[in-house]
Image 1: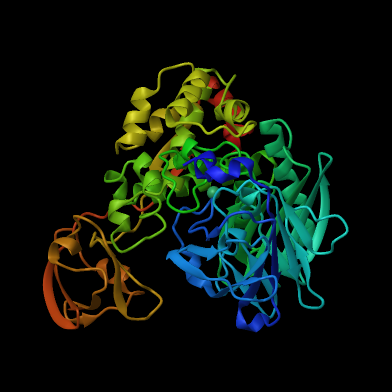
Image 2: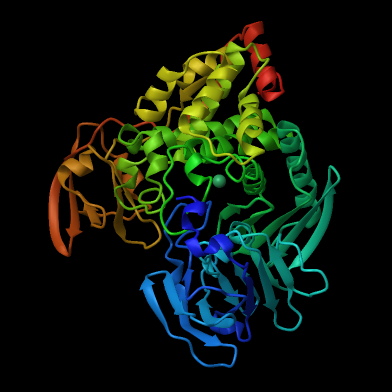
Length: 593
Ligand SMILES: [Zn+2]
């Protein structure tokens, strides 16, 4: 659907209405935002109000309307207006003869993630897509948002303030509003500059993050990405960081990103690097997906799913760069980067669903699968983040080798930026393939068919070997293969996952069953692997378990151990060409590994 198609006929000569929202939070502990919409110069006999069902960047229908309550509509003199609900997220108000009115409602906000709303005694955070209505046909009108914070609280958002009005912000249109998260509270704000552009880091929560170090490394990440794309396409950018107990996540915007990270996750090197990788990922999105957008995300339809097969590029390629950029920024070395790529290969190669779901389908079905995992997910799905990252690795290596290091995946990013991103023209899957082929200088139809549209195994070694590396299985002291995993958090042996075609599945064990004993002796989640090591592949063991509270016993024949770990290791005696390729790719010598 295009915006033009939504404009009602009468709007051809319409007077632009003045749309002003006000958000108050008089009792934060109720988790209720009090929202008012003031509308002036309204000309139509009906007012349609629709709340988005999703927010861009998070491909799941979240039904934000379920958190809306106490809707009412009044004329300027306080008299109630007639309204009705048309659908789950659509309210309609009778406005014949009315040019000015107020809508009031509450939004329950008690879900602390980057793509939902949260209000408690310590702060308020909201995503405008989960708070504000759009008025069909008027999405391109300017919208003002006034925040009424409690005393001592302040407001930060990437939106510009309205001159002369404290805590009132201005969005050029509804898309811009949805793309601008709000933080209201006592957060710390740190200002810094990179390449002459203004940046801010706002931090809510306590933990062991050192702001100076975060800012120093964030500056390096910004510089590395600006170098790749040739400058920064904004004047001001906001990093909004929530320090939480367990959370992890990021949501990209054009002029900001929201980050949620464990409050004590900044000391250990691995955890710190993971945070910097998250920063690099969300920041990379300001180009890739916020401006370089798949065609079906060129104009957002906030009412329903926006399907695309190209998230392998929007998310997967971004995931590949989130390990490459900190390396280029000097935050860690090539050995660390290869360790991460090895872990990604391990995750891919130990997910049975890679044989079932093609990469392009994983992207298309994100709305019903990736964001809605269940006990069958591992057997039937592959993440477009993970496999997209690995396909991007192969494409980068393919281009570098074929073009003798004169070109790389960087050139694909730059060309996509020039051709589609700058003008925000959506790209089709075919156009993306053409750009990659033009940079690689070869036809890649066969590559796309095999690795994006079918489920062939990725031939890592064919692509890695010219760079002096091989992907190798790491020998492990693994037990014979049973093919199930247990939830470890409950102390009992509740079955979390049963691998397709495994001995456990053939014996009739189900996800949700409670495993009690092996050969008559109790087994706990912590003991399972160790107990299996007492047996050999081909041995028959007896499992006792509850299935829907019914005690069952079955015999299982254990299989050969499966590989659990892959690593990227240097070849023996690399040639000078392999050395050169490795150096050009990762900026270090192979011998440094
Ligand atoms: Zn992402």
